[in-house]
Length: 247
Image (cartoon, rainbow, N blue to C red; front, top):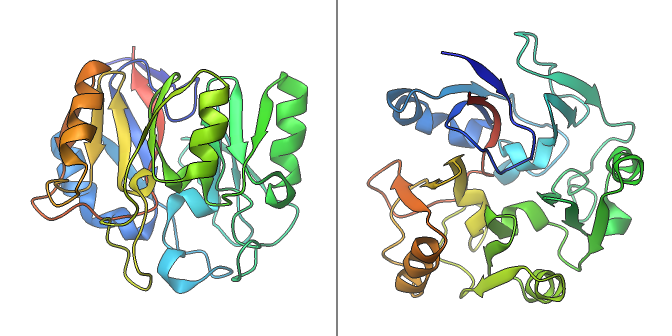
């Protein structure tokens, strides 16, 4: 099997062969391995709140092409999977000091609360001519299910409004219903990730969500099939970072 680095963050073109999880997602490793996906688990991030210390979307931002930015205190990945640089500023446990890496990349756009974004991401966007779409929500990545470059699902009004302004079709869903121990609830983006251009993995079943039928119909209209990795209700693990795909 030949593989390559995924070029566009969150949106693989081929079948994902390798991805990165936080410790909150370690329980999914057997299910992913059964699908032929290698999973690397990051160590907990001691600088942020315990409930999200094991969330990949809080500690790692993937630029694409095999390069990533990691939070301070996170061990460098040494198996050759990625080239990682370290954030110049240390995160803090209180919002918004914890969200510097929780940015949503979607094609030529990056959605995030700009004043809380890591300066390295801002510099990268300027260098590559990528527009930063400023939103009120600092947890932009975990708030959004990226279906493809022009379709997203979110419960966040500020992200939805900004996305629609840019021609991105948005399914707005009810907040809650994605379990996240330590908080009232988690977010849909932290509970799913792409496994190929036409496959979206959920951590568990979405039947309990009041908008489950609308979510299923939206995915079907996009030509994307859902895969459920456990037989539990869907839960927020901080998503996953797909980094390699089959050629």
